[in-house]
Amino acid sequence: MNLTQQACEQVVRTAVALADQGFLAGVGGNLALRIDAEHFAVTPSASDYYAMAPDDICVLRLSDLKQLAGHGKPSVESGLHACMFKARPDCRASVHTHQPVASAFTLLDRPLPISDEHARRLIGGDVPVCAYAPSGTGWLASNVGKRVRFDLNAYLMRNHGAVCLGASLDDACRVVQLLEQEAVRWFQRALAAQPANRQFQQALAALNS
Picture (tube, rainbow, N blue to C red):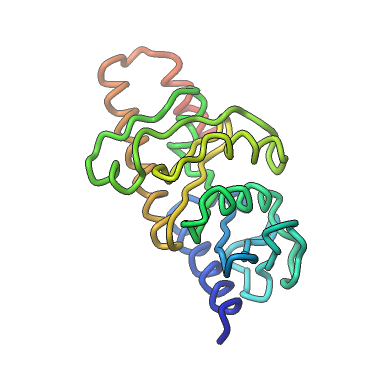
């Protein structure tokens, strides 16, 4: 099995695992894995993760996003993943989620403090919220790209979701999990201190809208 086949199989397995955990809702969210310095594999657009096969995974050239393999149409966020890979050559994996609590937190438009020491080591520090831009646009990729740092593996996107990075898909998924835990802890602390705060209540209410 060559590197491309391995990457496509890894992407399918990881997408299913993330969907099982509720981090990829419906056909929302996507992920990419660097194959080598010039190519990456990315989930196809608007695909059912449970019906996806390795042959559906799209293989793109990093420099210009030309599709070289895969039956599906590349994710609309392929440009966002390419931006992450270019900014962080040390990372092989980029995961964009619509994970529920962290996504709700983006409505507050403030950095997410990371309080747990273990989470802080893996994430890298407090997580910024990048300015809003429409999904799938170069504008969105640019907004996130401006905030990328070599020591930070998670980024929130205003009214949208998160992007988590890692040296492997397992590492990036662990960042996804820790980011969600930290968002839950933040809301628990905030509501305990200010139970009548309408902004906090409205952000959480968006989870069920």
